[in-house]
Image: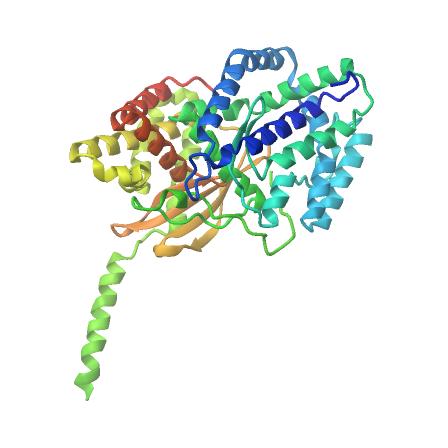
Length: 269
Length: 204
């Protein structure tokens, strides 16, 4: 990696390298049953253990310092800044899903928050009722009817699926465009703050996982997969199938996504 | 001639009367509204009430609105039939206590949150899907949907879906994983430990 390379690209490169490694090793076929959505479970659990340990011994403490050192308003500005960098990604994926109005709204949000909101530190667009649409390439592929593929725990990143990995890469690259040409002395701290900010925003969710899960790996995997279907359906998925004690284990989740009939996008959050 | 038609009519009327007696008096949405009202009340009572007081207040409402026995059975899936009657009873009791304890531990602060029921939708097997939204104090929303089933003449909750994540499917996958790796006793022990943890859960 050259010193000029954007540190935000690291995550994309990591995801790409990881997927390539899996593809070449043919791991996806090892020990998999028909319909098994986690054929890499042994590898995934290993990476989950690594991610979990890093979080428990490093990120959790760094986040604690970050949240206690920085006032809430300042942290909100940091979150706004990184969230604003995602707007072009949202707008592009709105378009790829045929949601022109949503795309226009996200472009408007980006323009407003970048200028009036001082480089995205503030979020006047929300106050002005410009709705945010958090779309990514994984959701677009799902909207087009693509299956989720095997579940993948990406080292240093977290849960994903084969369908979502290209989106992780695209999102990182699109954010990276904003820092193209910048030196590593600038981009590395930015990347570090972005990671800590993201961890801080997930703090309550992680506490809830610890409080409720009896198998944290399975809890996160199932929660992630089901929530992604919820997002693909823009927060309005069909009811899940009825369950009884004899139901097939593979039938316990929400149905596979199909492109919604309407292309209007209601508010997600 | 009259008798030919009278008999089926009388049979129909008799059956209709029986059905009317069995028909749930409270609609699925009304049952959900009762649960949500109890949760808001628990939140408003806050930490002043303490875990045990919130638990005691919520327990009768939750037991009368959630089909914990059915949920426990479905959550264990095919493993349920492998258990002895004593194990099934012990598991159902722990599962019920854990369900109520989870509510009591999490719904303890009120910052203007409110629930709103969005509507009902029929499902397969005569079940009903109730959609609702929790609006948080900061304006954010969480969708809480409920799968309702008619049990013993009244509508009961058999699954809760929060922002697309089915509680029952999640538990079922987790329990299957723990039982296959460590056995039923380890799972039951985990549930009992969770109950103890929730009793002493710090403020969020």
